[in-house]
Length: 617
Image (cartoon, rainbow, N blue to C red; front, side, top):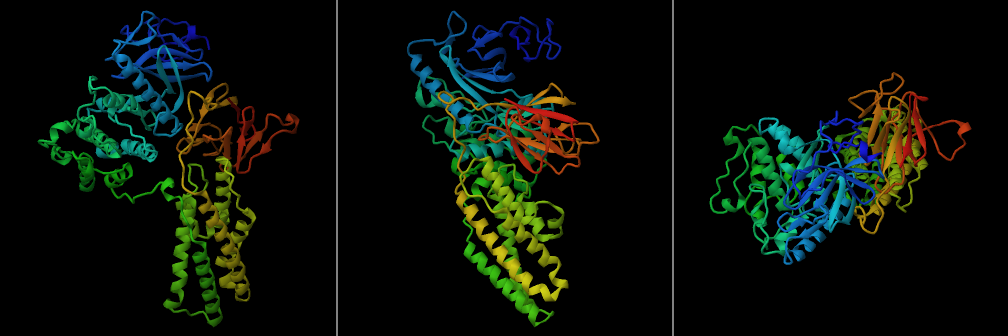
């Protein structure tokens, strides 16, 4: 891409126009102040800086272009305006005085820590994606994904300064999910507000601008002004030695929620210490459940010990009818006790076998043990699947539970309960490059067949009932034992390995490039959020208008640890086909059954060529 053809307002090709047809930015528009980098400034050989997107007390964010990855990015420059200035070259950041140098250097170290924090959550749907960190011009730069949309502040302004409780919950529950993850690895955001929540055009909410550098100055410098957002900062942030924790972010999120539904910013927490005049939303005419209002007011408690102590607790409390869902990281280690389960299975099959010999009429007390074991098996199946949930397991825990209740689905679907777990578990091991032993899918398939046979054949074939019970019980006991061992072997869920942006090379970015079809010559980045390609816009986020394409035809995604792109055929009617770059091209295409990982250079096509994509990096 020629930098001379790029618009500095949107980083699209302006095609020689003085005023961009995409964003109406005028070519040659200078920076609004001398302290901001001039548009078209080059940073290292990879990055080009465009117009300023925003500026706070500690940094300036620009739109940019990454020539190596050929994509638009957002570039955040460390620039604490109280102690920084630009040198005569208009690029170099320098302290305004000799006394300020230590503060500037200390803050830069914390700014780098912010980059490291973001690096742990690359491709998390609720946290802005981190790409790179580097030092130049006497300062540091964080390169992040550029997202289309508006801040929550702008979102509220466009809607009369407030939205309904349900609308606010839809947006901010996504932020709560993001906070669960960052708090899990002992990272605080410290600067949640409507300005730091971004709403993409598809409605997804993203958390921006971690406040590591801002907090650093509060700890380091007695002379540096404490910069906090009035109404959103809890009282402990006003104190230089105030103890902070997840409850600090909970207060700021609660204030953001309050502002979103009432249109009013809460009174500053430091003033509420002496006179708490915060009005409940319902007294301001806001319609919301009483339970949710109590949860919101608890999040806004002045004293930290009176607030919710985790994002999960806050989300469960404020969500009407919330069941208290646990995350996968909280489920593991499951510690399934196979001995007890196997003993229960053997006992239940023995009782069933004995009752069958005795006659057809059973008393309630005789069948009750079978019911207890059946319920325990349901809970076991659900916990097994939760242990391997990373967003890409084919069978969700709730669906697995439904399969247990409805054996007929085991005949219709290709991945029934026990066999489905083995397949999903083995895919999980592959995706995360774990050294655990895989489960024998044949044994699990046999257990499933015996299970279905017992459900459907046994009641109508008394001579074979005993044999079916023995086979079913034996195979199911083996499968349960192996499943328990496999899940327990996973151990506690550990956070993703953090890449050092200085010493480690950045992860390779992968794209789908349209070779033929509706998206020919177009390029789409692949990340952890699955891309579903199909004909039906309600089921797919990449739509291909062809009757030969299924409503949801194929799913594509990438795991952070993988070196390629995962492609899964979604039981499409006309199939998905793939071809390896190193294969003999004369041999044609291979039909995909299930899931395969494709490396850069490999290709796949839908329905015999209606759409062809190549993986590129």
